[in-house]
Length: 482
Image 1 (cartoon, helix red, strand yellow):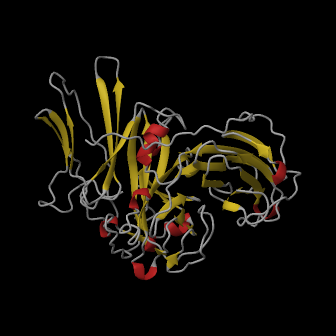
Image 2 (tube, one colour):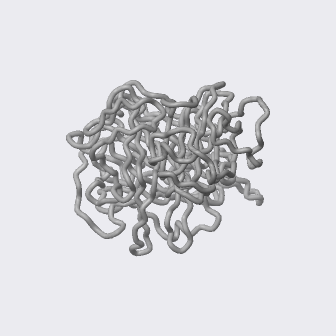
Image 3 (cartoon, one colour):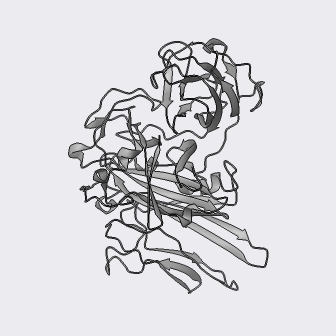
């Protein structure tokens, strides 16, 4: 296996000045010039009774009553702020690098229901201002969560697509004990060249959605969808770099396009992943027939959504037919935590998007609870020479009876060659008591087989293998992209 490296998100220290503690009572300011200095943490506030002292480009909030906070990061990183935890009204959030006009870096309305979430890369020692306002003059109480993490994906040379946020989740079914979901998409081009979008570009970029469950120290994938094709690009702000205003059949540099979850769940925009080469970006994405309520959507069994105490995550993995050849495909997966409502099984977004990070990283970041890192989870990557990338993770658990449980997860980000086997050496004198395997089924006419991998304990190793080789069956159950 390759040498290990950490790909986890970690919190960065705040600037070394006297700051209010998270959760402390704040002397709120609705003046940007006297914005309250804060550290990363959670704060309660209200815009009731405040006046307007600023502007923002989204949520019809330019003249809404607002309150302001400021933060000074000690290191370069990614600043995120969200009201997704709680708010009594339709919030609008924005981050600015100065007071006054023309200073907005990012703005969001309705990232999680009627609540908001923003994220932007920041520079050490620079003051940043967080504006909390409301849609079309709305006011109310809110809980603001602020975090500083590692920097998001740097702008790429050439077109560079990233999944920056979800902005709503639609729920369908159940049918036969299976629920289905569709995620909204806030998509950014952080490259320096306009990105192909929809139309004659075969629906590029296409995004596949996945679902995961973290329970009992183990991360498992529990669902997948067809790929959602692009149609036509808007040219909005909100990508932390200036938008050049290009839309339509191209998504301009620095520009953001937003699709709602109900549109992304339409049968006509969902195409089989088997028509996509994730490494080269070549794709054939025909619209197939319609079906029942769960057809082609992100399918998860009700049993997998009913685990007490489990954490759940959803993920989107993009492929672009110009992003991939430009070498910018390694930041195309992003994930976000969700909760599942008991009884209805609706999904609700929580926290902020982990942009440019596949959901396998959630195993470490949230392994001991929400935002509580499990340092016993090791993360790494393996690159196929002149081809795609796999992410892997593993954890060892002492069961207290002289035995240990070894859990492994492997995620294929963008390899078209795909994974056909996985092997773990077993030292002499060690007895393998039992083995297991978990994957998710292809569905809705995807041609790949669903036969589980075989497990062999021999030759000093435990080896999991696809039931057939590519030569025997090109559609055997291999570990394919996303």
